Image (cartoon, rainbow, N blue to C red; front, top):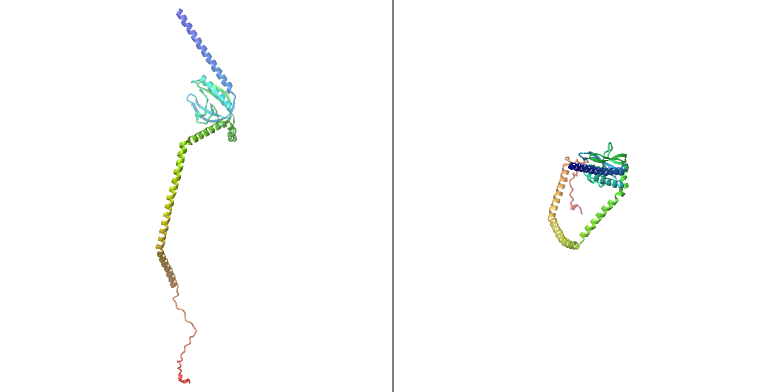
Length: 289
């Protein structure tokens, strides 16, 4: 009887301790849930509706909304809420808050939610509530107003000041890398090798130009000599060709003149021709005294 009483008392004490631990866990979970709801509920922010993607096999597809870089406070609160929710649901629930780099977009915070009948683009959103389901914690959003294309063009000018610090940090890193590379390049050995290369390059240019000038001079002299020989040898041939050509042209013109020469003789002059028929008188010198 005593042993049975001891066992029953031990079982009752262990069950009461387990119930107390479970009650404490439930109270901690409820406190975190209430804290997250009060932290995020009814917050209005600017975001971009990017795409619809499969979140998990148990959950299905969810719509992804990327937070604008200008929403610095909400980004901090979302990261805090994500940390607290993962502490109470380490492996059982999927929290619908993630980094945008996980889905292949630039740095930022994404909310995995459910959006119906809305196009992709920039919206003003409002957080309606935080729902705790069997396998996930989802932040439900309400689309307040779609942003026009005119604002989208101006958006980089409005939000550029927020990203300026990141851009400055990248520029500083790039400048530091350039300075480091220059310092590594301008060492004593590199300067010595550079000077040696410059001297070798100058000597190579001088010797190469000298050889080129000699070759060019010899080539020009040989070309002039061969050209003069060609002229002297070809002059009689050219003169003979010109003589033959002139004879051919002259014969061609003579042939044309012969072809077009009239075949009829010239008509005689109709004027009468007087003939002197008288005998020539001889004069005797004796008649002249």
